[in-house]
Image (cartoon, rainbow, N blue to C red; front, side, top):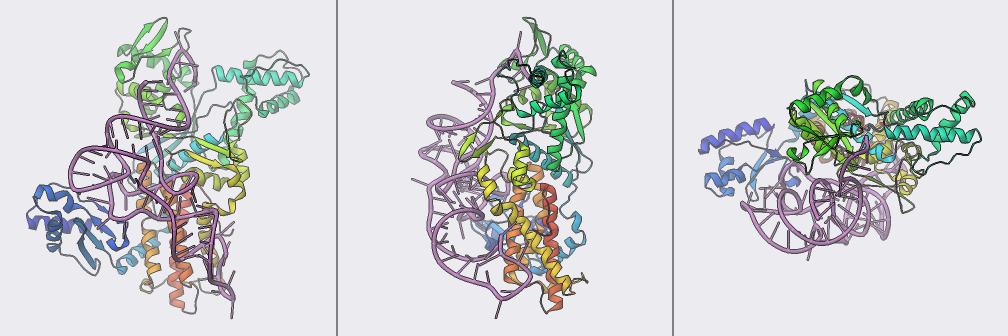
Length: 543
RNA sequence: GCGCCUGUAGCUCAAUUGGAUAGAGCGUUAGCCUCCGAAGCUAAAGGCUUCGGGUUCGAGUCCCGACAGGCGCACCA
């Protein structure tokens, strides 16, 4: 339809004698009185054409030849907008086409042939996932879903590090708890991992080995076992949120595969580094940063920057067209150097999109709960899922823009879960399922053919219009990396459906009308189901 | 001190990437079940979009400057 109008406007501009190179854009007006599509082309061209924008709009309209069975209304308005309203018949035709491939409705192929990678969670196995990780996980997974729905070939990847100081401390924490289990009372440093899960791992080791590990080093079985158990827990938590990674990338493989050394050689060759005070410095000040940064410490150990850069370089070598990093705002300072370095190495850093999400603030009984993995006072993601359910967790993390701080009031989420917005959406789906069941009982749902022309009530046409917006909504959510707009959209779908349901009976004595309205219900359920699939929440038949 | 994010109804947040009269949920108030699911629907009240400048046909949205909150600013990750 946009294309149709585009052609007519171009022809009209030609007739008027305006031959500027312009791209004509259409938008859906907020006000329903302004029609179904609007263009601001006259406003844009007015100055160049040396005309008043209102007059120009009228001129363009006067020279357009429009089929008014499809577009019964075309008029200029306001400062020079041109508004078009489509006929109900046009929408009915679109709706019939939509029903032909319900299961794939919403899928588009703009990303066809493109390989995308989404890297998210990437928490090191030092403890259970927190609520903060939860936002990262759900957001990343949904971005991946959106990319899949727009035709990309997507790899979800989890990057982790099981070496270094943090992991040594973890191993030693377990070792000390193990000794406690054996009856010793070693002093347990304050900056060690305090969580109860450390004791559990220690107990498992005691059960399995007795006191045979008394002289084992922290880096041995303790660390190994801690990593294994914690990682299993993390994966279990992710699975409960329907998140499945295609790939786990161990930072250590960059060392064992020689990628770190290779990168350092490359840096030296390009003279992007220099030696000073026994350390190796990256000339980040030449790459837009305030000062140079150390990438290899004087101890010979690399800082996190070096493997990070090497990892991103690897991503490029794997041939991705789009690489997305999901990071919490506490890592905000880490990525500019990585991107600058990648660029300096000759890669197209525009292919990397870094999405920073803000923190989740947990409110319990009106109090802010400060989160720290090392201290014991955090609320785990598991506990949250246990309390309010996976659907609510996913939906809550997705309903806000990733750039905004998220307040998660635990008390509210627990107590008022019945009034949670996610239920509003799921209720619409369950209600439709119930209507269909009712129709079956009445022996009315056997035949799926129907006469579209029977759908003529305003609530019916409104519903059709909203459903038809689904594909472009998915597309814009994907291209803007903003899943929260999908939750908004689905909320509208549910709202418009409830309104329709309230005003009109679906299953009635009129068999033909019943068939038509059942078709409308089926279409609505499909959009909801497909939308839920992207958000990763369930589509219940009953609630 | 510097960088990034945020500031919109009493509270939590949207706003079609610069469009016409800024919208939802919760909460408050008043209505709607003989009837396919009331976890629903209808209506009311609630706003100087933190403040001050600027850019243009047009600004909650872009630019500059204040103010407030969050996160960072290592030879930690």
